[in-house]
Length: 187
Image (cartoon, rainbow, N blue to C red; front, side):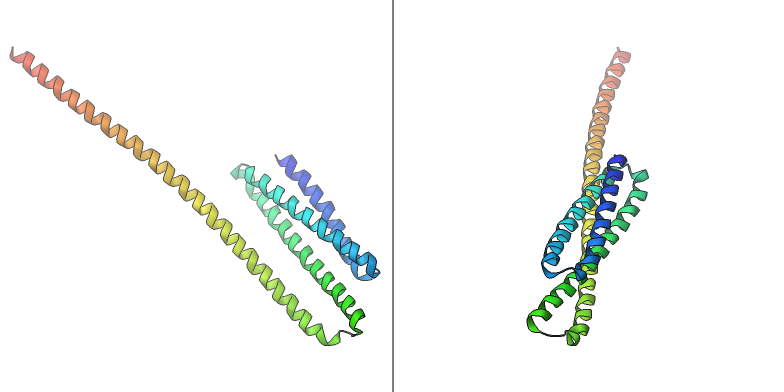
């Protein structure tokens, strides 16, 4: 199981290295190649997300005693993925601004503050979304644990009720045998 995880890790490392190098090249490419590169990076980002999902599934199947180290590694990979997405968005914004400037003949200096403000707001939204997702995951896990506990309690209740019924039957049988013995002693 950990060998699958390590295989996914290697694939993720290779893929993120490729994505990083392509993101860095986007601003310097001619317009036609930029479109292709942006589409290619989007596809690779999706592949990286799928790898993360596979790795997350592998971590969930690892025994709880050794899951901690893998969970920490997953957190760092998710942070790395978030950074890649942010860098890509910045690269795309720069790319789209270049296209807009070419079409409008604008130098783009007036919108620099707006762009920075937009990027900050986008990052805040992404962080909030990640927190909400993490909270949702915790709620789902808590619900599952609660459901398991209720099932265990239900089974325990059934066992206790059966044991109580056996005790009543045994008590009734003891009463009968006591009466029979008492009757035999009198005779």
